[in-house]
Image (cartoon, rainbow, N blue to C red):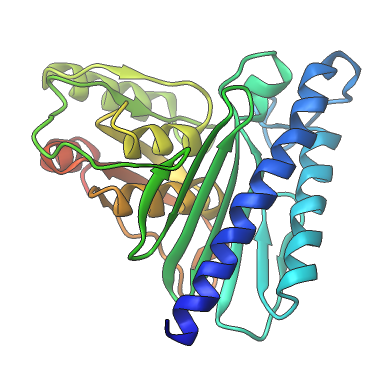
Length: 265
């Protein structure tokens, strides 16, 4: 095993372990959510609680303890610089709105970049005890079972995930939905883009599109989809691109052309 492969294996192992550990902590807060103090960010629908912050603190502490030279980008605490070739990208609780409202569609999302390549993607869904794990060249797995996408499914015989937030106008979202329905497709939105990307990797959704997402919402899901045999639209990682939002699209191969046309990508 090469040195890089060994380093990747070690980080993947850490990502799996801390995703589950973070999920246990988040689930405790979820089960006692009536006691949470919920704050809003830029929009009343964009919320955060102490659960988000403590879960990110836990993940950061585990990374620093094992790989102190790695950089970290998290939704709640921003960027901490590093000297290695690795940058962790984490969303402590993706789907905070479902979380605080008692719905199970939220997850822990942990990714790592090696240079400019998405190298690791792990998503844990505490309410369902589902662990999605992937690393470049190693495949994608759900609770240990290898995921392989069916490249023949299209938007017309499967369901597509659609995301929306305050960065995108209601008219734009309505047009996306209209175009998808006109093309013979159907859609869901469950409040967690990371989780819906994991569902693409698992074949539960044929694709996922959101006009504006941040790296911490999509990096882990992108790795999962790619390693399961799917495709994803590139996310800008050079310069300060990693800290800004961008369009996110991932799909099984049979749905790529239709969804790229719908998204104008």
